Length: 350
Ligand code: AMP
Ligand code: MG
Image 1 (spheres, rainbow, N blue to C red):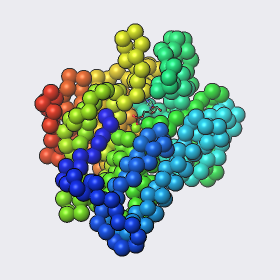
Image 2 (tube, helix red, strand yellow):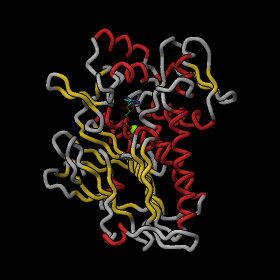
Image 3 (cartoon, rainbow, N blue to C red):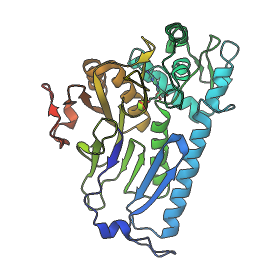
Image 4 (cartoon, rainbow, N blue to C red):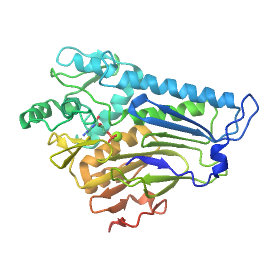
């Protein structure tokens, strides 16, 4: 579900007031939209009192870092860390940057925790389906099964000392599409902190990072978009001061063939788009990297498996929306999330 922050507490005048140029500190918000890195539109909003120059410096540093993450973690550009690991599959380990290694480690942890519902080696299936590409189509069954046989996170060999990664079977590929934006969110938070910024929101196309609550001390109010393609309204509002709010849903990227919708979150067990009865899953935790991988995992696992996974973890909470338009919360979110779309109802075990 693409999330959008609800700026309801801002007056329209505030929104259209341009920041004053120069060095004198001025109250935010300062807003910059960054189009491109990680295949998404990122909007960063800073609410601290800063000079316009200071805000520009923070935005520039943020943009540069997002581009770096894009370049090292995309599977689609030759020479990227992820592409090199794939090209060396079946032959030799490939060394990767410390940053990439850490993200692969978290991805592997979530692969294990979810019993492979999230699978860091999903690359061959992601390439085969190529969902999001203009000519995406349903592959042949034998192609799906051949790609599926290459997907198995348990075969991945990681060497901490060398910071190398090895895929032992030729043709295996990593894919960080389900976690890289999450990592970018954590990096965005780190950069804002390094610039002394205390109150900010970064929206990385559905991955939201909240810092410090509103300047008046209250929590941010985040609107969760309804999990249906083409709709622009809100499902409900989440009140939260700090942390990451990450949503996975079948409506985010998909194509249609013969009246059937095929979305981008694949079930490694079937090799096909996950069909576990959910419209979306939102995961809330401090680490955006973890929230991102967990939301993808939960979408594949479905309501009961996903909820059990989240409830078994410290510091993670979830919002599950089923195809029957029922909404389920993990206990830590009760009272923090309010449903505003009347077409949706609370599931029994809220
Ligand atoms: P997200 O939107 O974060 O749920 O991630 C979806 C993206 O993750 C897809 O576009 C793929 O690149 C990748 N992906 C799809 N299915 C899986 C899976 N089962 N495990 C790990 N990554 C996946
Ligand atoms: Mg994800």
